[in-house]
Image (cartoon, rainbow, N blue to C red; front, side, top):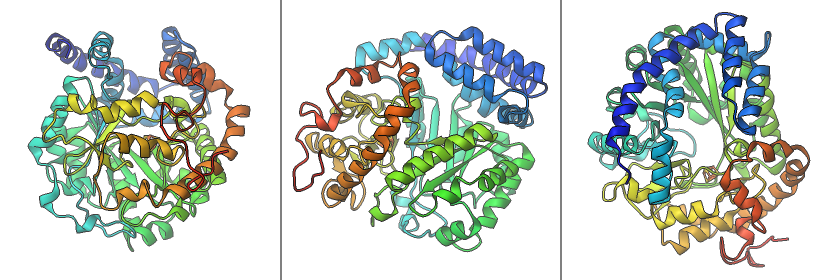
Length: 493
Ligand code: SF4
């Protein structure tokens, strides 16, 4: 591992100063159109690549007078100073302060990049009993200790990872959550929560800690949310949002798109309500056929995937709410982030999984260092094949290229980490291949006709350029995912 101590010392010295400067600048940027112009001029001066140019163009348009970015930055300037410095400036500083020399050395010596984010589910316990979720059945014995989570974060920070996404179960059930975040003021924490435990005391503590952004799960309307999460949950979510907004605490939303709710969660009414309640950004995930009773019929269809992507882009461009389509925005990230390319997930037992939705592992963080986990053959195999296809609107080795995750798991002897996880490799394969073919037939023409800008945007992304130079997608090339899909499973054209 490259020499780290001098880098760390320099990072620590710079961090406070940079976060303070960014925080002060953010409070100014939202105050006038002139300040906004200053921001755009400063960004323009830093442009070196086509990707940066496209981002700068988008920002200029987004923040033009009367456009939503103007309101977005005004809202940022109204956040409590603790939050603006601890989370917003912290998030930006962490991207800008990544030491390029250290990153290069890590890549040269170990063949890895430090993940942008490390996802941790310290506990699977939950205070709700949602339809189709079994989190309430877990006990406190099946969770990571405070010391174990502390050790993961220390190891992550040592290789430059400073974004921690806390999941579960319900993360606020794990009693050490905010104490751990407070001990790592130079990292930021995104906490995916049902929000029902955000009472006045928790909200006050979030304000004090500063570097935590609750990301609140919501199903769209009151009817849909209560139907899934239990009567009264929607009202409790609204109350929690009010508590956060009134204190100037940033928060985001998280929506799971199913075959039944795309229109609801991409409606302008829903987005406007979330802005009014104080949300700044949001994540849209697809329903994934994982867990104890996976149901392929709940997955958004191929047409609905497109509808979701267009809906998210429309809202992102017209509302002061930065929404991300976790699959469709593979166009911005160069494809799948899993296997340590950009992130990993560590579950409540310490299993190190390539993705929150891929319940397989070869290593456990209680026995193996984070660095060694990232260097595992399993993760290297996944990274070697990324991105799995040229069409980044269908980036996923689980649902878009199902042969890929199956082969990576089988040839590296990864073991299932959750009850029923193997069904993804066996019973569900025919249905997943059928789904992947339908998605390909709908999304390939969209990719070819409407997504030419991605080629320029990813000009300097070596992984995407490597995929483009290969003859096909990972599941079509015998030397990559391996065996071709058989007739019996198959739908290969
Ligand atoms: S495996 Fe699928 S869900 Fe996970 S990061 Fe990759 S594309 Fe996203």
